[in-house]
Amino acid sequence: MQKAKSLLKPGNLEEVAEAIMTTDKRRKISFRKIKTESGEGTIYGIAKGAGMIEPNMATMLCYILSDVSLPKGTNLYSVLKSSVDRSFNCLTIDSDTSTSDTVALLCNGLSGESSMEDFSQALTEICIDLTKLIAIDGEGATKLIELTIKGAKSETQARKIGKSILNSPLVKTAVYGGDPNWGRLVMAVGKVFEEPIPFESLQIYFGTLPVKEANPEILKKLSEYLKNNTEISLNVMLNIGTVSMKFWGCDFSEEYIKENAYYTT
Image (cartoon, rainbow, N blue to C red):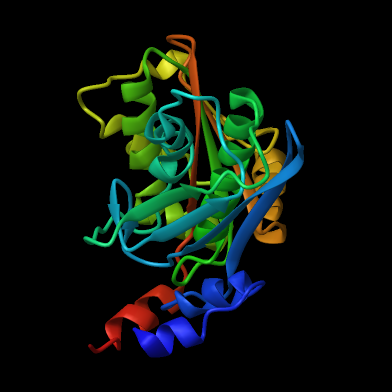
């Protein structure tokens, strides 16, 4: 402990972000400046995670530090949980889990009080930034997939279908190979048996390009979109309700197998 204490110094959060890395290939950092009653404060977040990512249980660590305080009586846990539910809990790399899933928020209040609205917005933005950084840095990943589920009847339905799509090895490998495979996408929606979706209402887009009943010309454009972009927008419209949610994941390449097949403890 004494040696660890002697190494503490101001301005070394980037070193901390690097120190917590395991199979990560890059540091994951996001921060925001927000107004306070006495001027300006900072919220600074770091995270690590690249494999065994399926919150609520994941090999993921995130530490968010701030010199801002919030109005008296604010439940800081509730503020954090709201942001986490819209970010980290909408993330998956490989559907596997571990026991080191942690998101911690610490505020010392040295820069004064911020409004609840400004703090919550900045905190959520940071959490989403870090979520995306984890997804694109996933083991064997070459592409970030941002999935939007629209027209769900409930948040529960959106989460079940969203995770089913992003956890599908067939969908992941199709994205990696540049194959806009309608059958694999429909399979991932349809295997959520407790949430049946009428085929007639279902619409799926990569970017702005429709996958359903795509003609050869559109299929070519879809393939080019998948091959030429590292950030893939996937929009799944259920059209049976009013709930919309975003989720984040990645593709699977040969590197995922190499990294995990030859891994030893």
